[in-house]
Image (cartoon, rainbow, N blue to C red; front, side, top):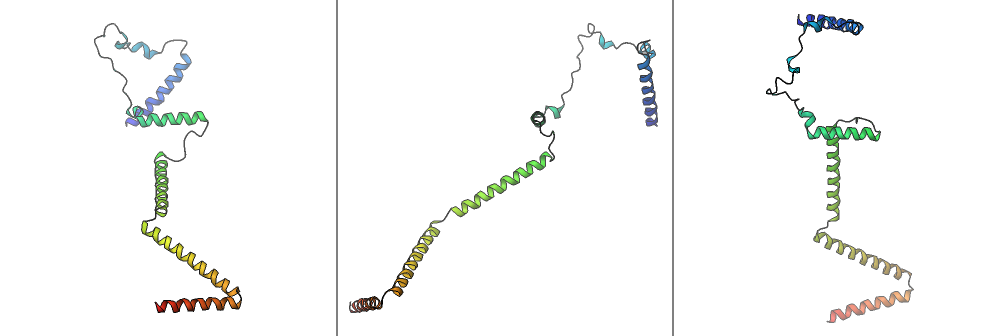
Length: 168
């Protein structure tokens, strides 16, 4: 019921505005002759009264809103798109996830780099054993290439060396 009266009021109001816009220069509207001027216009009489102040919008006063507004203004000045396609929450979550992955990769890399003293000692021994194996392989290859009399001479040395050890 109220909606119907509001619709009627809105349509009559728009008709009145059209009518007033046509006759605005000819004569004053009939409604203005019936409405008395507001009493708050007289500033001399009511100096003792407290005048209302405009309320501060808490959203516009918030620091995050001001920063967002500043960011939007600067991006418009730069000529970029006015608004990003992703919402702020999604951007923040993606940046956190990216930072976490970077931290995790750094930790894994440090773990690979850090070698405990035991592992370092094992690596040294392993390298020494590999070097000895390479030397033995080189000697065997040289022995295979050597003439027969050199091989016999080496065998004689070994047998004489082993015989000396048994006597001691």
